[in-house]
Image 1 (cartoon, one colour):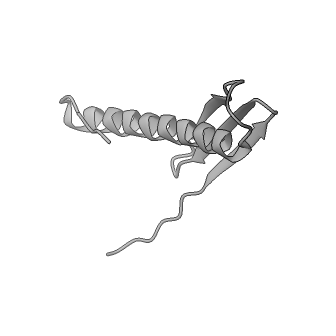
Image 2 (cartoon, rainbow, N blue to C red):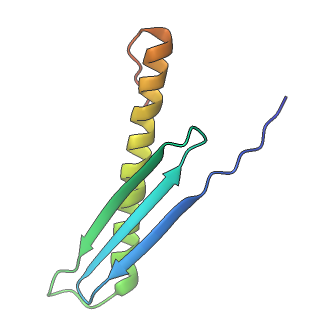
Length: 89
């Protein structure tokens, strides 16, 4: 039987003239809530490009979210198999 699942990531971005912070949250089917943050700071010598800071902060938050999800999956595999799990991106 094939299943179709939808997982939604909530992403909030806050920024100032020089900094951006992204918060990514994912509620899993087992009710676990994973929340991560990513940060970017513009070098004062660089031109102002707000979107670049938003993209960097978002990428960092999503990267951390992916790593946390991998660690959770590895832990669940290890609980079932009683052997070390080594999932990677």
